[in-house]
Image (cartoon, rainbow, N blue to C red):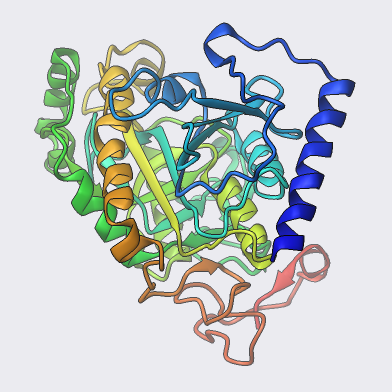
Length: 413
């Protein structure tokens, strides 16, 4: 073990030195640290916060509970805009800003988890960002915790003006021929499921927070009260257990939102609850899954928290265009504030019970992982694991006219 740690330390030092020599970095004053480039040890965080853009990251700076700017470590391969990981001096808590969209998230998290500068084998990762929200499930300022992350835009797409009369949307699952048919061509990133007992513990911690709200958000959400299905959208913000949709496209409107809600239900065998909309989570989770396969991270130690900044569809009588471009929804500031207000309770809860509960890990009672079953076990959604002989056999596959589809992706059995 000593030799292994020594080897990792030597590699970490050489990476820092070679990167610094090849690519000098101008460090903003608030991120400067004497620790940068002088460490001779590996950081082993207990909690690692994943944010996507600066307002989310800034929510954690200057807080009374801990100083995330105690150490600022330049990590090769993460975002060129946000090229440092920030940690407390103890190294117990760290944070990265990935940059927005799936490619940025996947690239940053991949570089991070495979970096020799850290030991993540016992780290709890908490994705902590803002999101759009479905008024059928939650409202502006709400704090949501997901069990499933669904890559809703990984589908065929037709312009809605050119779809057949019997189609409800221009989105059709890969390899299928209608919007309601389960994907027949599977890439592997369509759905991720995280640790349900851990999610419930995070929810319990977050429920002790007093959430922020705004008068503008209160006024705007009141417009949703006229539609019975949007009752949740008209109420005060709270802590909600529901799922997150991932799409690089920042979409708005009832038709697209309903289509992606239907897809969420379809690919989770009816158990997923379409709730929040974001651009990164499936990408981050895929990177964390691959590092778990390499025994560098533990996929059972992931929390996906999203706070609601804006509605994914308009209220009755409002246009889609106005809802997205012009409406003063008032949800952005409360959503940013609630990342910290709810998130700090989760961080403190994990650290406060580290030795008694969290160091050993929270054993999942549900399947965790991707749609392929890459980490073992049989997914409780999708076609079943491709790594064993017991796939789910609930959906037939018609191969007529599908030769090109079969050539592009894995067909379900």
